[in-house]
Length: 98
Image (cartoon, rainbow, N blue to C red; front, side, top):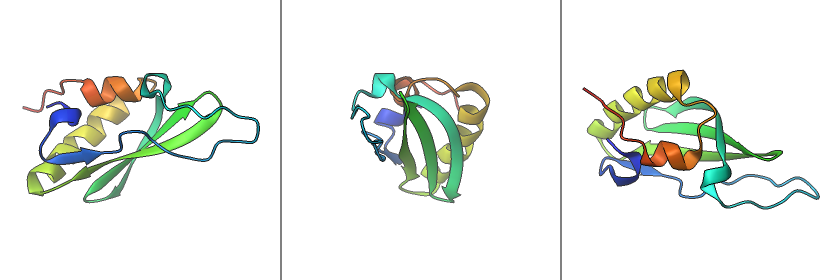
């Protein structure tokens, strides 16, 4: 399962957030590193990412019941193995959900 191409999920293409005064506005998801993952609801995961000193938030949301099962799996995998990986790596990773 690749998040970017999964028909049961949607995701934030460019995580957003507040840029601190004098900070740089960064849109390159290859420079955004996962800090934490939280389950917002049955239908969504919040991914907190950091780019430089700025923190941003992105979401992965389910479209249906199969998407909710995918989120259960992703929440566990991301927390256990993907902290400090880039947002781009996460979106393009081929997760093995057996």
